[in-house]
Amino acid sequence: TRINTTTIQITNALNLGKSYVKGDVLESSLIYTRFYGISSRSHSLIQLIDKRIGSIYVPNYSRRRRIGERSRNHNSGTGSGGEVSSLSQNSSQNDNNMDPYLDLWTLCRDSYIQSRTTLLKLSIRNHLDFLKEKHGLIGMTRLASVFLMRLCTIETRLYLDFFGKDLDVDNNNDGN
Image 1 (cartoon, rainbow, N blue to C red):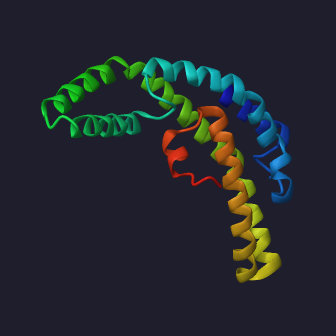
Image 2: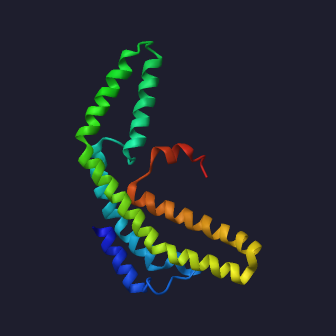
Protein backbone atom coordinates (compact mmCIF):
# COMPACT_ATOMS: atom_id res chain seq x y z
CA THR A 1 0.00 0.00 0.00
CA ARG A 2 0.98 3.62 -0.36
CA ILE A 3 1.36 4.08 3.39
CA ASN A 4 3.71 1.12 3.77
CA THR A 5 5.77 2.13 0.74
CA THR A 6 6.12 5.67 2.05
CA THR A 7 7.15 4.36 5.47
CA ILE A 8 9.89 2.20 3.92
CA GLN A 9 11.12 5.12 1.78
CA ILE A 10 11.27 7.45 4.80
CA THR A 11 12.96 4.81 6.97
CA ASN A 12 15.62 4.25 4.31
CA ALA A 13 16.11 7.95 3.54
CA LEU A 14 16.53 8.91 7.20
CA ASN A 15 18.26 5.66 8.19
CA LEU A 16 15.74 5.31 11.04
CA GLY A 17 16.85 1.80 11.90
CA LYS A 18 20.19 3.12 13.15
CA SER A 19 19.50 6.78 13.84
CA TYR A 20 16.63 9.05 14.79
CA VAL A 21 15.26 12.48 14.00
CA LYS A 22 15.89 15.07 16.69
CA GLY A 23 12.78 16.34 18.45
CA ASP A 24 13.31 19.98 17.50
CA VAL A 25 13.28 19.19 13.76
CA LEU A 26 10.77 16.34 13.82
CA GLU A 27 7.86 18.46 12.53
CA SER A 28 9.75 19.53 9.41
CA SER A 29 11.25 16.12 8.69
CA LEU A 30 10.28 13.67 5.97
CA ILE A 31 8.27 11.81 8.61
CA TYR A 32 5.64 14.53 8.30
CA THR A 33 6.18 16.14 4.92
CA ARG A 34 5.88 12.87 2.98
CA PHE A 35 2.77 11.79 4.89
CA TYR A 36 1.10 15.16 4.34
CA GLY A 37 1.97 14.70 0.67
CA ILE A 38 0.07 11.41 0.40
CA SER A 39 -2.77 12.35 2.74
CA SER A 40 -5.03 13.98 0.13
CA ARG A 41 -4.85 10.99 -2.25
CA SER A 42 -5.35 8.57 0.61
CA HIS A 43 -8.19 10.69 1.97
CA SER A 44 -9.99 10.35 -1.37
CA LEU A 45 -9.74 6.56 -1.16
CA ILE A 46 -10.92 6.56 2.46
CA GLN A 47 -13.88 8.77 1.48
CA LEU A 48 -14.84 6.33 -1.26
CA ILE A 49 -14.68 3.38 1.15
CA ASP A 50 -16.58 5.36 3.73
CA LYS A 51 -19.36 6.23 1.29
CA ARG A 52 -19.74 2.54 0.57
CA ILE A 53 -20.00 1.86 4.30
CA GLY A 54 -22.54 4.66 4.70
CA SER A 55 -20.93 6.30 7.71
CA ILE A 56 -18.98 9.50 8.13
CA TYR A 57 -15.30 8.63 8.61
CA VAL A 58 -15.76 6.42 11.62
CA PRO A 59 -15.17 2.73 12.27
CA ASN A 60 -17.99 0.24 12.68
CA TYR A 61 -18.32 0.48 16.47
CA SER A 62 -18.89 4.26 16.40
CA ARG A 63 -21.36 3.92 13.55
CA ARG A 64 -23.40 1.42 15.54
CA ARG A 65 -23.45 3.73 18.54
CA ARG A 66 -24.75 6.64 16.44
CA ILE A 67 -27.38 4.42 14.84
CA GLY A 68 -28.52 3.50 18.35
CA GLU A 69 -28.58 7.16 19.36
CA ARG A 70 -30.64 8.06 16.29
CA SER A 71 -33.08 5.28 17.02
CA ARG A 72 -33.51 6.42 20.64
CA ASN A 73 -34.07 10.01 19.51
CA HIS A 74 -36.50 8.85 16.85
CA ASN A 75 -38.45 6.70 19.32
CA SER A 76 -38.65 9.33 22.03
CA GLY A 77 -41.38 11.14 20.13
CA THR A 78 -43.43 8.09 19.19
CA GLY A 79 -43.46 6.03 22.37
CA SER A 80 -43.28 2.88 20.23
CA GLY A 81 -40.56 0.31 20.89
CA GLY A 82 -40.87 -1.59 17.60
CA GLU A 83 -38.81 0.87 15.59
CA VAL A 84 -35.61 0.19 17.57
CA SER A 85 -35.62 -3.53 16.87
CA SER A 86 -36.45 -2.92 13.21
CA LEU A 87 -33.60 -0.42 12.91
CA SER A 88 -31.23 -2.78 14.71
CA GLN A 89 -32.11 -5.64 12.35
CA ASN A 90 -31.60 -3.41 9.32
CA SER A 91 -28.31 -2.19 10.78
CA SER A 92 -27.07 -5.76 11.31
CA GLN A 93 -27.97 -6.71 7.74
CA ASN A 94 -26.25 -3.62 6.36
CA ASP A 95 -23.17 -4.27 8.51
CA ASN A 96 -22.91 -7.81 7.09
CA ASN A 97 -23.10 -6.41 3.54
CA MET A 98 -20.42 -3.84 4.38
CA ASP A 99 -17.92 -6.23 6.00
CA PRO A 100 -15.45 -6.12 3.05
CA TYR A 101 -15.49 -2.31 3.16
CA LEU A 102 -15.14 -2.28 6.93
CA ASP A 103 -12.22 -4.69 6.62
CA LEU A 104 -10.59 -2.43 4.04
CA TRP A 105 -11.16 0.66 6.22
CA THR A 106 -9.68 -1.19 9.20
CA LEU A 107 -6.69 -2.33 7.13
CA CYS A 108 -6.03 1.28 6.05
CA ARG A 109 -6.30 2.54 9.62
CA ASP A 110 -4.12 -0.23 11.05
CA SER A 111 -1.46 0.29 8.35
CA TYR A 112 -1.47 4.01 9.09
CA ILE A 113 -1.08 3.49 12.86
CA GLN A 114 1.64 0.88 12.45
CA SER A 115 3.56 3.13 10.06
CA ARG A 116 3.32 6.17 12.31
CA THR A 117 4.47 4.10 15.29
CA THR A 118 7.41 2.71 13.32
CA LEU A 119 8.48 6.16 12.18
CA LEU A 120 8.07 8.02 15.47
CA LYS A 121 8.90 5.56 18.24
CA LEU A 122 12.71 5.82 18.21
CA SER A 123 12.77 9.59 17.72
CA ILE A 124 10.33 10.22 20.58
CA ARG A 125 12.14 7.87 22.94
CA ASN A 126 15.53 9.42 22.18
CA HIS A 127 14.21 12.96 22.53
CA LEU A 128 12.69 12.17 25.94
CA ASP A 129 15.96 10.52 27.03
CA PHE A 130 17.85 13.61 25.84
CA LEU A 131 15.55 15.89 27.85
CA LYS A 132 16.02 13.75 30.95
CA GLU A 133 19.81 13.78 30.65
CA LYS A 134 20.00 17.52 30.00
CA HIS A 135 17.32 18.81 32.41
CA GLY A 136 16.83 16.10 35.01
CA LEU A 137 13.59 14.35 35.76
CA ILE A 138 11.59 17.44 36.80
CA GLY A 139 12.74 19.60 33.89
CA MET A 140 12.25 16.70 31.49
CA THR A 141 8.68 16.26 32.69
CA ARG A 142 7.82 19.87 32.00
CA LEU A 143 9.54 20.03 28.62
CA ALA A 144 8.36 16.57 27.56
CA SER A 145 4.74 17.48 28.22
CA VAL A 146 5.01 20.48 25.90
CA PHE A 147 6.78 18.36 23.28
CA LEU A 148 4.19 15.56 23.52
CA MET A 149 1.26 17.99 23.39
CA ARG A 150 2.68 19.54 20.22
CA LEU A 151 3.34 16.11 18.75
CA CYS A 152 -0.18 14.87 19.57
CA THR A 153 -1.68 17.97 17.95
CA ILE A 154 0.32 17.41 14.79
CA GLU A 155 -0.48 13.69 14.74
CA THR A 156 -4.20 14.39 15.21
CA ARG A 157 -4.14 16.88 12.34
CA LEU A 158 -2.35 14.36 10.11
CA TYR A 159 -4.76 11.58 11.08
CA LEU A 160 -7.71 13.82 10.21
CA ASP A 161 -6.07 14.68 6.88
CA PHE A 162 -6.10 10.96 6.09
CA PHE A 163 -9.38 9.81 7.57
CA GLY A 164 -11.51 12.96 7.70
CA LYS A 165 -13.13 14.60 10.66
CA ASP A 166 -14.89 12.22 13.00
CA LEU A 167 -18.23 13.51 14.28
CA ASP A 168 -17.21 12.53 17.80
CA VAL A 169 -14.06 14.69 17.54
CA ASP A 170 -16.14 17.66 16.33
CA ASN A 171 -18.71 17.21 19.10
CA ASN A 172 -16.01 17.07 21.79
CA ASN A 173 -14.23 20.12 20.44
CA ASP A 174 -15.37 23.20 22.32
CA GLY A 175 -14.18 25.64 19.67
CA ASN A 176 -10.48 25.76 20.59
